[in-house]
Image 1: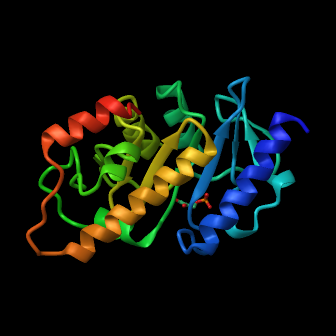
Image 2: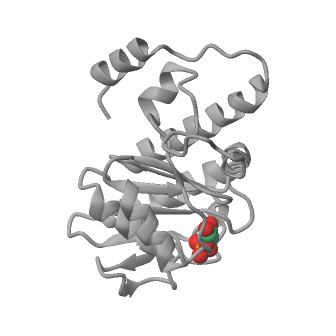
Image 3: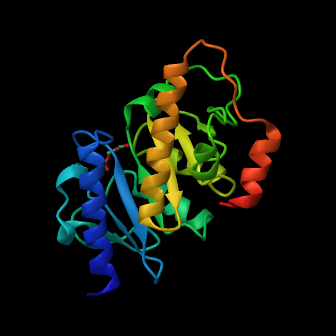
Length: 212
Ligand code: 13P
């Protein structure tokens, strides 16, 4: 089986898992992976992550030209921007998962990091989470805004929209996305109670021992 076929199958499999776990609904969200030659596979526009047909997943050149499959996600340009700015990234996951989207709708004083380091796994898998200003889905200005923060951040939160999370594999990007949604859920569960996030020393130790 070729690498591309294997990755197409993996996208359908992980898409179905995200859908079954309630992290994707309707036609919201999109997934991408980078192939060895720099082209990418990305989910087709208006497709449901729960029912992807591997053969119809879109294949795009680095400049966004459609090479194969159905018309690509309207967000393909921010996926391409993430890959361009993050050479180590092999996959990007964008979801409209409930708790992270709720977090994206709040007023934030510190837009450089909108989630406190509540747990070790959040620091290990997500780290700092900047808020990207709102732009309409599919707007090239959104891809430009994503590009601006992508070099320094593997994950980010689009205002009034949802998270974008990258990883060194599709598996890693999916697991990082799940961690981000779970930490957002914890954030709302804790609510106004006085929380005790990890100390700066604990965060630094995690970043040293588990570099992203
Ligand atoms: P697409 O159906 O074009 O992938 O768009 C869905 C989405 O999540 C927009 O942000």
